[in-house]
Length: 537
Image 1 (spheres, rainbow, N blue to C red):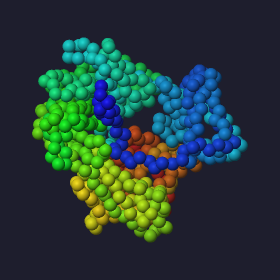
Image 2: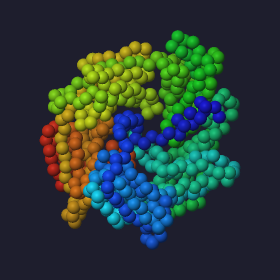
Image 3: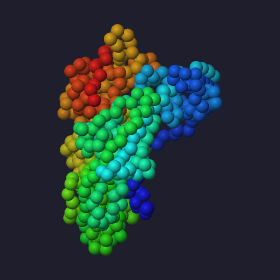
Image 4: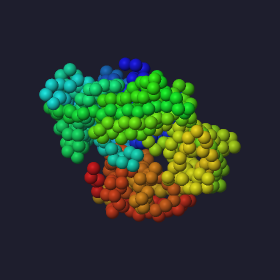
């Protein structure tokens, strides 16, 4: 496969974890040393069987990590730890990872206070066996299909919609069509199979292919069967047939900014959906291209020219028929210029600590970022398109974004082609409200393992970025949240599946039993919450 093809495959298999997120700012992660020690032992749950070669990781409250492995007797010792507060976890292939002190999967665990020279003993773990899903994938004739990617899927709320996304490791079918997915934490999963044999189809008359298929053999997720996996359980015999379909062809014309054919460049059909296969083709001398073997889904057609100064991009949705006459016109990257303003609530931070990110609407789009200058101006370059602002600013939060005086905080703004978008004002505020409290169970006993959600009382804001705030208990069992002033619902849950804390369907279930909270910037509030009923996924 060509180098371009290898890059394409990597792009097509990228899962989305929670929408386009800006990268975290660089920080010094060089471990500091000290004189404290944490030690313990790892066993198989329900037995005296030791687990050697288990990775133990201690993470400090300063985000420093310290690793070691257990010996042949399952014992470990983390030495030379500086004083601090630590979370300790254990992980081993084919077992479910565990955080010391957690009472349930994804629970908060117990943070350990360690003083200089202190030895903390008996930080022990009992790991449960992970689950397994095994089966076989065949074609419409009952013959095995090789190199089919099979993955466990769970629902997550991403980019304004509920989506099924891979959750855990995937597997490829072998020459017998067999697959075996291991290392699964207990829970409920859909199982999806995708045949990517047509990814590099080029211009071909062969339209045969296979559509994304959910167990027990359907292309409709509403008809898919969800599998419940208990600790250490193997669910086998899950044989199902791939759905034969007629694949789709996308064709069009690719030109540079002067209207000349982009001869020899490579156009990619990129998708971040697991349930769709991508493709690509070399642009012919007359600028025309044809990509075959595509299955239904949402794609972005993209051409990146050498040097990064120009690019062409167009979204395309594929159903069951060919898409023709797509025009890709390369455009130069545009400049986004503006200034960061502060509301006077605190002394401005150093400009070097501020980095601004311009996020494209499409999770497959290309954004831009800018380091703020000493005079608090900035300039970023990015391809034309629609963008929203996010940033890392320590204790400062994004308050407003204005373009030519108009508020575009929620709506975002258009980055114009072949030019500059100027007069962008980004307002930051250090004002906030502090919410803290405790959670009590049905017996009025204080709980030390829970999740607290604060979300707006206005349902229209549930789909906005950073609308919901989540907290877990600290070492003393209490929670703390720093939020913008506003009207909120507050709820406590034993657990919530990852990726669903901002799902409007979930928030709608929680609203009726929630505690109402109205708070203004600068205010503090202490809450005592009761557990809400479990949500229905």
